[in-house]
Image 1 (spheres, rainbow, N blue to C red):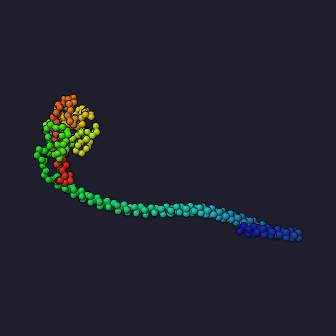
Image 2: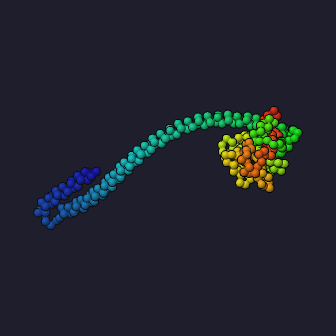
Image 3: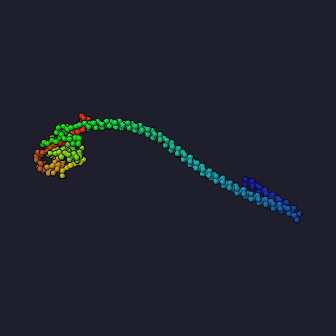
Length: 303
C-alpha cells in the first residue's frame, strides 16, 4: 500500500513538471493569457490532496503495524501463559494420579481395618456376654446365705478367727496355714479399726520384712503396704525385728498400733521391757465369698 502511494506521488510530480514545461513554451507565444498557470495550480492542489491522503494512509499503516505488533506481543504472552498452563496441568495430572493411587491403597487398608474392627467387635460382644454370665454367677453366690465356721467372726465379707495363745510369729503363720488361711492382711483403716475393737490381747499380723530389710510385705499375697498404722516411733528394730504385731501395753501406749518384733523372742528383747516369752496372740481370717466358684475359697489368717 505504501509503495503504491509513493508511485502515485512520483507520477503526479512528473506530470506537473511536464505541464509546466508546456506552459512555458506557450507563454512565450501568448503572454496575455495564463491557462497553464491555472492548470499547475490545480495540479498542485491535487498533489497536496494526494500528499495528505498519502500521510493519512501512512498514519493508518503505522497504526495497523502497531496493532499487529501488539497482537504479536500478546500472542507471545499468550503462548508463554499457555505453556505455563500446560506444565501446570501436567503437574496436577501427576498429582491426581498419585492421589488416586494413594486413595486406592488407603481404601484397601480401610476395608482391612473395618474387617478387623468387625472381628474385634464380635470378640468384645462375646467377652461381654461371658462377663455378664460370670457377674450373674457372682451375684447368685453373693445372695446365697453364708455363715462363718464356729469360733470365726464376720467382717466385710471375711471370716476372722481370733486365737489367744502364746506363740511365735512363725508358729502363728504355720497354724493359720493349717487352718487353710494366712496371717491377716490389713487392707483399710476401717478394717484396722475393727480388728482393734475386737482385740483382747496383743496379736501377730502377716506383715514382715524378712526377705528385704525395710520392705514390708504381707504373707498372704506378697504385696507391699499402701497405708500403715505404726505406733510411734515404730518400726525401729532395723535388722533385728522383722515381724509385726498389734501392740499396746508392751509399747506403753493407750491404744493398739503396729509394732515390729523378732520372729522368735530373744533375751535382748528386754530393751523394750518385754519378757522372754512375750504374750503374743493371733488372728486368722478367710474371704466369705468365692470369686470363681464355691470350690475355690481363698482363706487368710492373722496370728
